[in-house]
Image (cartoon, rainbow, N blue to C red; front, side):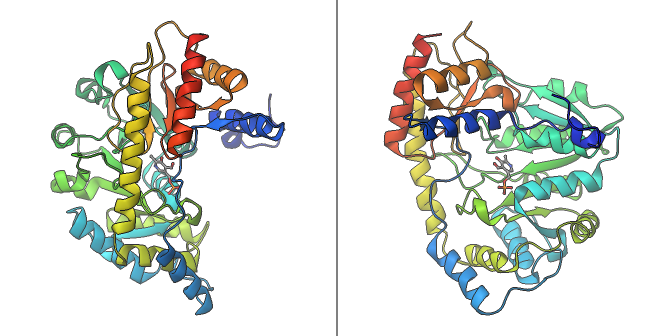
Length: 392
Ligand SMILES: Cc1ncc(COP(=O)(O)O)c(C=O)c1O
């Protein structure tokens, strides 16, 4: 349906999230009294750890309720720079960090300050669904680098090399990845770095928001640590949402060259200003406090990911690339079955099972399920999925 005539071309071209239709329908079925099992969430099912909440409450009591610097509180920027330097092996100064309203705003701001209309952004597919829309909002063209379950969702280096042209400005990487849960191994990152050394005009955005959610034996590598010689053209996006269960706090950060951070700060100063002042105190407490809470939550996802993975593998016709991180599984539907949107619609209408169609992430042969729900919900969901598969 065309929108009202006063909408800007930019707004008219914006794709509403494909997943909204499914979640809205799931909610209305629930309101009608239907028993709905949802494996569609994209967020932790834990409450934010108490010591982080306490720090924010204390900040409110202490009067931390006023405007702050647009780039973020100096203490928090410094703590993030320290974390990147010490834990990720990426030497970072305070002025190279911008505190943002979630990882989302970090990506949005970055695209706005480094992309010109007509620039090309390379996005490995499947991808997190906001990347292409944000690139379009910056006037850039998107070139997808497809991968498939058949090849374990590995980045095809030949296709990466072939896709780089004079207009290519930015390559996105996301590890651990949403929706596949794939963790890029060190060798793959090294190979990407090697290739990019021949293309000095190409910048890199490394989205590391799931860095703490790794299955046993997996290791997270920050791209800038693997290729320090490319650090001046690599931008790190990260945040507190997934690791510390702080999705609603809207706290993320962008790290990279001081010049780009200065430009992104100017943009933020003219748009949203500082991130909520007392929420930043919560984030500071998260970074300075014990990491036991993060480990406990990560361990819990690990055991539930295993239940989901084993259950999916036992289903006839399902092809699953074992997720190694984040809290998703992205199985491929059996050959010849419905497209992902129709399959998810039918699963919801007929079996009360809510999942996210792979089409939302650029792979129409797959569906995304979360393990950030209780064991019982996972098992219930698997049973419903098995019924839905029998009917297709
Ligand atoms: C891959 C990826 N990057 C970035 C984000 C943004 O996270 P937030 O804005 O909640 O910090 C998400 C959220 O789902 C994500 O999955």
